Length: 218
Image (cartoon, rainbow, N blue to C red; front, side, top):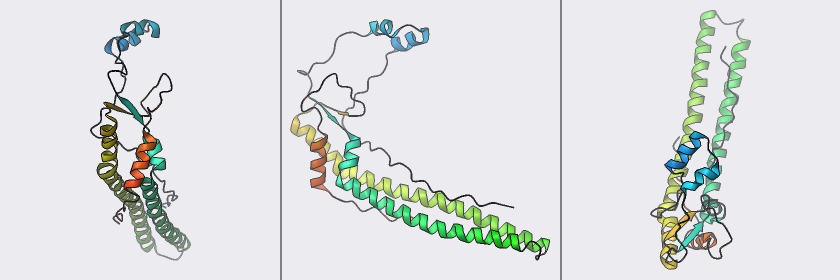
């Protein structure tokens, strides 16, 4: 006899925004010599002999760091978008919980009727029940994907129409040569004015407070 699967719709974590379009992001990667050294099992100190002391100085570059995680937490428009998504997810959960209860009731009715129905009639009910369970599982997956697609579309709108122009405007106003994602930055000491996240958040909050998330299909 087919068994219902426990409804446990999980809410996917919000996708990280790739918000610095058109801005160079520096990522320190191991050079080929360091990789070869690792395969030979040499020490880190030995491998680092391949690295020179030459580096670009502050006199040559104007650099800033922006924290995408902080923007997602503090930007009013993103906070509003998260609430919209949660609302759609709660409605879906309520809808599917009702369907699950109906499926569970149907299963119980089939079990009660085993001694009453003919083998042929019982088999038909079991087949229909299995179809309903399969459809329920498809609906759950499709509806969850539709919510995520609508959320991602709204997120893309925020990035392209609002956040990217803010970042680019900050770069122009401060005459920056390089903006680095805070998750990738490793700073040797505290540098005043390096982090521009607060200014980006303030500018974004002033520019836009909400973007309507389309109603998910289904």
